[in-house]
Image (cartoon, rainbow, N blue to C red; front, side, top):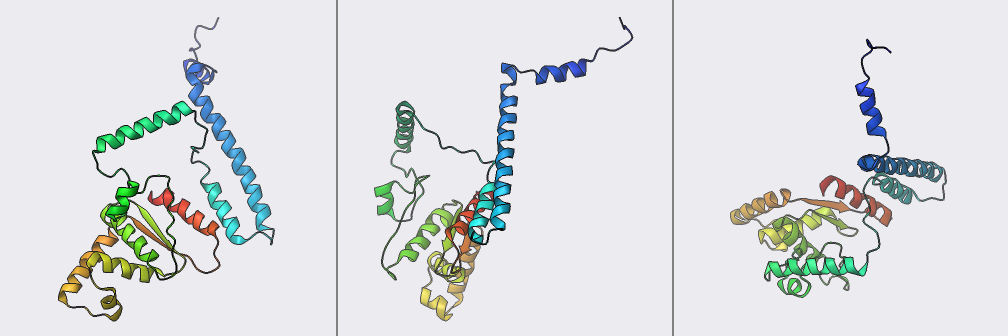
Length: 235
């Protein structure tokens, strides 16, 4: 009827792309997920506003909830698995260990006997080292940091609620540079020790390690917030 009017091919293409079909399932699923995230962010925002105006809500807890809200876009891997899926994952992991031919499957701790017993630190595991004061827990942790991060290059964060970062760095430099801790505390440095010191400092500053010194009274919410932030920024 109107031969002079051009056909609206661009409009038809947009309409075709928007038409519900199996070909556009990914597009629509993304939209549904985004709408869910927006609703969740809105609810969290209202929760933040009410919490900020409530004096009974600790400030640290509120800050932790804000940090958790910022991580909303990170997909969750928490879902049930069937026995078949778990068994398949086990077989795959066993095959990986066989192919290693005796090499360590996890992240080294720096202690050969402990690595032999545990196969190293595995992803998703939590290790607890417990002992009385002044037994050597911090020394073990510093040695593990040196092995897995300074030498192995695994991104790490060292959190302390007791020692300050300067004291921890002194211990780490003592281990890396092979200089007695007492010499570093007393400032007894000859030319050889100074060269080893500079080499150790260069090696440590090039490693992917973050240091977090918590002060008295800070809650675990602050720690969780800082860990989530370090994961996003530094891997």
